[in-house]
Every structure is written in structure tokens, then in C-alpha cells.
Length: 523
Figure (cartoon, rainbow, N blue to C red):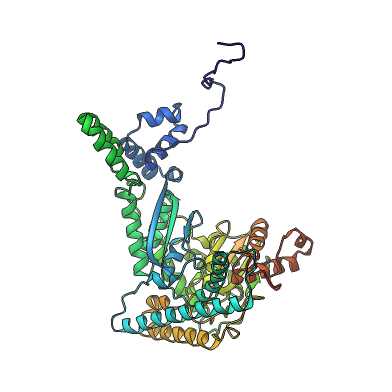
């Protein structure tokens, strides 16, 4: 070896006092959950644990500690990816309504949903009316998409520096932002999710308790997908490799095939007892009845897009109001006025309805998450709500879909209006026709199925409870110029409400004024 050459040293193995960090790949989700759970019960390293664990031992461990001892945090350690394809927008909203959820759904901004098809519920003789309504909405969607694109091109010339395909793509997305208001909730979409097994278990149980048959079926399919062999992305390549090895050494090929081609069930133990929740079903019935009795004969008062509630009410009033809110169509403020007028005993009886049927392992209803400093009662179009729905670091209470609040008109500062694009009359006629069919189906005894005819432009009501950091985050993120004008307006109203109540904090918001025209070519 020359004087200028240096000997390459092998990296030293970690000493007993040195931190060791390594990523892990290839372990089955339940096996990995078992290995991680063993940290509290064994001195073995992760590598040593995984080397000695079998799927059978993992199942035995989970049956003991997860189901018998109730150590539910173990299921947080098993993460499972799913693809859920060809489900309705209505079902997708219900499926993703989890606070511990990660995933992505098809975007109404970048894809033409005309080719997606739609879900048709069981309606018997009313099926023809339903189908006709959906087809009419898609036809209007097509025409308004094309019309808005031409209006945008006429109003916004292409910069020389911008490629024609980028210009077309950007304006087409803006046109879809308008046309999406016409998509009925029956429209098919697809999504992917990566959830831990505990979230999956509660998700499946909640879906199985839904009043919608489609949603219940998805719950069954999710449970089956977790307990049956998963799709292996490397199966074809692994099979070819095993055949190649087997052609040289049959025994070796068989051993490799046993490892690479074995069926993997992602969570056969952790979700095997996920069933419809009697707690959710019984509580929903009783709270719906209680809300109907309390608000009987009351008209729905007009309310702002965003109403920031004051924080002066007693906790008991907030709990009782929050429990009733998802089971009617009134604003939080209107319900609260009636709850506050009740006797203390009656309020406590309403709160008792929320826990009366709770089983040993049932989590409390989301309505019991109370005491946050910022509570926004929001009335916005369903399409915009779907974007706001992604914010998980807050408590969200959703009301059922209805025609009672009317629908929104797609208006964006600096962008051609429907009137300027010569589609204002067609838009209103399409929305009114969809609402007419909704009422027809609802009054014929199909209230759940009727909801599928409602377009994304329909207003829906939801309560968002959060701390200051989340209020600032949502206002900043959703007011950005690249966002959809629907939720930009809501974010702006949230900021204004906070700034009015806490003027000294307004300067901390990096906010975009949604009333200022935006560069429509900026994404």
C-alpha cells in the first residue's frame, strides 16, 4: 500500500451505550405491532424480537393483551394501506370522517368526474327519477365545464412564457372549480388510506352502523380486506424469480416461494370483532328524537357563513348542545338558546343520552370533546366542506345533508361569473331540478337515498372546535390564492371573526384577502 493510500475501515458496530437507529421493512403489520409492544415486556431488541416472532405467536399475544386486557394502544402500531375505489362522494365523506386518518382522494379540480359513473341506491319505482336527475346534473356539469373554460380563455390571455399545455391545464382546473358545484353526491370517486388498526376498527364499526346501505357494505369490505390475503405489489416479479430459481434447484425455489409468495393478512386479529356499534345506533336514535322534541315547530333562523361562538356558556350547556347538533339542521347558536332555557335536570338527561348505551370498549362520542376556545359554526357548500374536512387537529360535528339551507353560487373575485359565461340560468335550473328530485324521493320514504341527488353546491352545516394554533393554521392555509374560492371565503371569515374578538392577535395571521382578484394562472 502506498503512502498516499488509506485503508478503508468497516463501520464499527454500535456499542452498548450508543444509540442505534434503523428502519424496518417487510414485517407483517400485526407481527410488527407485537414486536413493538414487546419493548415494554422484554429486553430483546427489535431485530431479535422479529427474528423469533411468528404470525401465530402474534395472534396469541394480541388476543390476550388487546382483547382480554384492553390494551388498545397496541393496535396503533399496526399501519395498513388500503385502496377504496368506486365509492360515492357521499360514502367517501363518511369513510374519511376519522380524526386519526391519513389518505388522499381523487381531486375534483384536476380530474373530469364525468367518466367516473355513479352509485345508485335501492329506490324501486323511483330509480328512473333518480337516474334522470343524475344524468341531467352530469350533462350540465359537462356544458358548464366547457363554457367556463372558454370564458376563462377569453378573459385571461396566455403569457408568452407559459406553454400552451400548462395554460390549458391551469384554466381547466379553474373551470372544474366552478363545475364541481353540479356533481351529485352519488358521483363515484376513489381514495387511498393508511390507517392504524385501532382507527380501522373504529372506522369499520362506525361504517357498519351507517344508515346508508352503500356505506355499510364498504365497512364489510374493509373488514374483509384486513382479514384476507392482501394484494402483493411484488407478486408477479417474485413468482418469476421463484420459477427461475426452481428451474436450477427445485427445493431452493420452493423455499424462496414459501417466503416471497406467502399470503399476508394485514390485521386478521385486530379487526375480527369489529361489528356495528349498538352504542352509536341507539344513541343516534335517542338524540335525534330529543332534538326533534326540543326544536319542534321552530323555523331555521338565518345564520352567517361563519359564526364564532362566544365562550361564556357552562360546560353542561355546550355538551348538551353538541350532542343534539349532529342530529338536526339548526345552527349551534339556535339550539343552544333552547338548551340554555331548559332546567338543569333536563340538560343532564340529554347528556345522559350520550353515555347510556356505551359499552366497555366504546369511545365517547365526538360531541363530548368540549372546552375548546374557538368554535366555528360553518355553513358552506358540500364541495368546500370536503376540503375543510381534511383538518384533523380539531373536533368536527357534521349535520345530515338537506335542501333546507339552499345552495351556493360559484363566485370568485377576478374570475368570469356564470352570467358572464352565459350559464347562470342553466346553473340555477340544474340545481333547482336536483332539489326537486331530492324532495320527491325524500317524501316518497327514501330520505337516505335522496341525499345522493344533492349536488356539491348544496349548503351543509358543520361545527369546528379548535385551539388558537389550529384556527391560525386553517385561516392561513385555506386563504391562499391557489386555493378554491369556496374555502378561501370561509378561511377569511374565520380570520375576521378571531380578529374582531382578539384584535391584538390579528397581526399574527399571514392572511390573504380573498376579496382581492387573484392571478388565475397561479397554482
